[in-house]
Length: 320
Ligand SMILES: NC(=O)c1ccc[n+]([C@@H]2O[C@H](COP(=O)([O-])OP(=O)(O)OC[C@H]3O[C@@H](n4cnc5c(N)ncnc54)[C@H](O)[C@@H]3O)[C@@H](O)[C@H]2O)c1
Image (cartoon, rainbow, N blue to C red):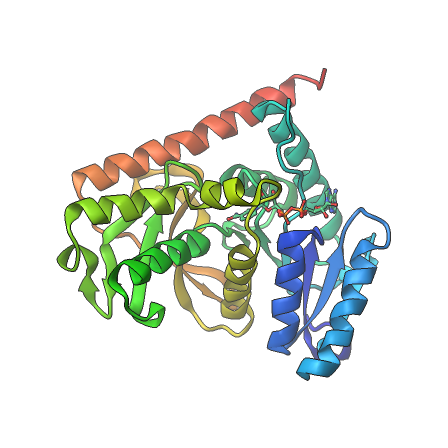
């Protein structure tokens, strides 16, 4: 379905740091109108107006609308969910899980009636768990609920490989599997510099160090920023996914998708390589894994399962 003026329409829910970058970078692509939704009064409207004025300087014609409601989002082709809160001092993991579950469930239920054909890209953390929440609340087929994590994690991996080898990032490809968190599985064997696997270009120690830095890539930035978490690369990772969906580019990138037996994993959102096109997830690629890679993926999907079970327990136990 087309947005106002015949353009495609993308709604970004949560006009915070990540949502702002997604809206800005998408508007600069100049093929879609963007609707920014947030609960904070005036803020999405203010950011939208600011971005529209930037359009005159850059030369894009995308229309950006800010709103505190969902009317403007009707007929969206893609909806990006970035709404949520960060963990505050004194807040338990369960408190955070309960709050973000509630937010993601509520925004999904509000988006679906006006945009029944949308593809939903989930960004809110804990990522894989929030994909389950959006999937249950939307009632869409699994092809249309996609979690953003692997694109970012592999961008981080690519950055560290390029820095280590002093080569152009353009020649580096990288693959990361698993849940979005400490248990993610950077796959060096499938990461290359123009086709040359990186284990042939650096020592095993350096490979291990870069894999470790990738797995804690988010935490490294949080500890530097002191408040808040990364948003430039996360925002741009979302835009890369939206490009592939709306321009039907059929990029092959790691995303969190609901597995139904692939990799021996059943009914869990876990990051694996997929093809993204006009129909959402158009193919799931099953890589040959070594014993230890398979074990690491199992451990990572186990961490997602624990969160799903924690959410089920929280649902049956009302908030204190
Ligand atoms: N998947 C990833 O790789 C990845 C990367 C970076 C950040 N994140 C996650 O993305 C989320 C957003 O991060 P951020 O830095 O932009 O945070 P932020 O606090 O800057 O923005 C979140 C926004 O959501 C809004 N919000 C809260 N409840 C809402 C509701 N019910 N409806 C609409 N808007 C609502 C807030 O007002 C706020 O503006 C966080 O959960 C963060 O952990 C995920």
